[in-house]
Image (cartoon, rainbow, N blue to C red):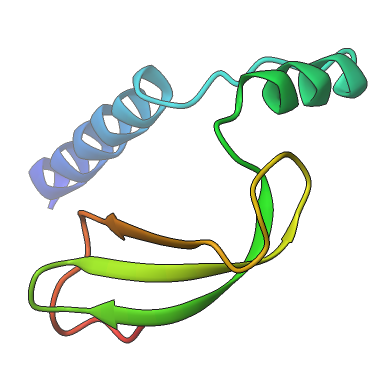
Length: 91
């Protein structure tokens, strides 16, 4: 029984060390306004849109611009391709 206890303790320490080594170290946001301004200036388009269609077979979608926060015209339809979703996932 003592061997089983040693194995469990060893495995626990191994997994704990693994979690610590690969954990996220996210920076603290110091000035949100500066970050937002940077993202706004470097974004291709910023808008509120409606998803018109999603094709699960070829991983494509269409979005219509409803309201734009830059120079994108309302009514513009964007077609794009996504990766990382399986056919069984609900969209």
